[in-house]
Image (cartoon, rainbow, N blue to C red; front, side):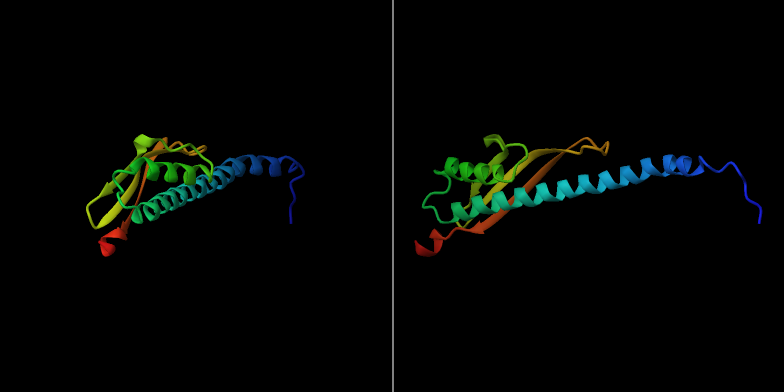
Length: 131
């Protein structure tokens, strides 16, 4: 077996070639994890707003209260605050729909750019059964 005497720097060169790919993959996984966490938080916020609106006498008349519930719930998870313009409350007489539109999410490492997230929750209006 023949050994080459000058292999001292080969490990450093190999690490230098592999490390950027490894770290890009690692931080890409972290970025997508953040994205899934944010989507889950937005879904939880609109679900909480829809649960609140489902028991109101007049969901459309109290849409500002529903928006406040959604904003407060979304703030408890951190991240960018949700604005009133991003929250929609719809009511068709039988169900309540609460929606967050165009919530900006920016990836830190990946060059994807800003992605606008949208989440929606639809619940049956509980007062329809009482009326």
